[in-house]
Length: 295
Ligand SMILES: [Zn+2]
Image 1 (tube, rainbow, N blue to C red):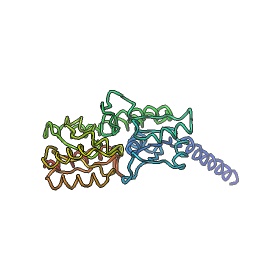
Image 2 (image 1 turned 30 degrees about the vertical axis):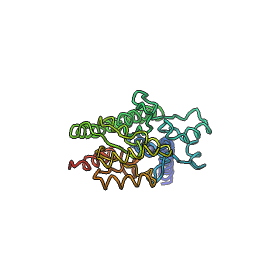
Image 3 (image 1 turned 90 degrees about the vertical axis):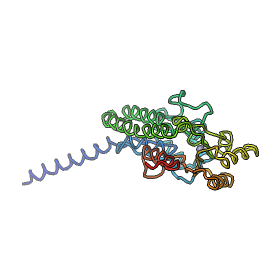
Image 4 (image 1 turned 135 degrees about the horizontal axis):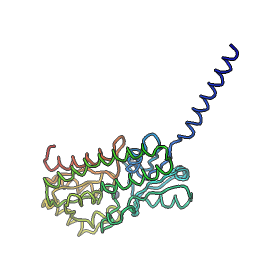
């Protein structure tokens, strides 16, 4: 009896230690994403093997004027992988990485993965290009496989799934491009520049859009031209950045509505509880609906 109890105890502690060391071994890889767009991609590839922290995830924040806090600095210092956008979109993260050097930490800069994909106007909103999203996902899978080789097959499967899912976005883009070839559109900020390239649509008043993005006052001539594009319906659509607004962009939205130019609200990053693919499909659907296409 005593023997049985001793044996039971030994087995119990053995099991307990397995549980403990097993858990310790499988500690999730810590990933910090500057923006939630990259956070949701990291989650899609890493699943339950990663702990993702997205720093800018509030849809009411202007990402172009974000200021990081000491709490963010601590997260960045501990991260094994950091994903950021680049092209001046998140210089705060660059500063933070420089402030806490770590030779083990891996940094992915989305806009630097394939310089050939970057628009000549250096539009920083690269996340509206599914090809950039795929490059980020591939790089994440590669780094995770190196950090946690035991889960290599798991990451590979997730990458495959992400890539397959992404074809729904490119298919929806092709459908929209075919239904509405060669449109001229305009926007309060160049948020969907990479999407417009996919659609082969022309973006009117780009100078104005970049001024709003950079918090520079657009010239009266630029404003007048923008208004004219709306009033005379030279623009088939107005893309309205919901995250970067001011009295001027509000007024232009009103003029668009009065002039019968459909307005499509767009975001700078993935809204909560939404995957990257769902977000892109939602935007494409909103565009199709605004243009009177009902599927
Ligand atoms: Zn922006």
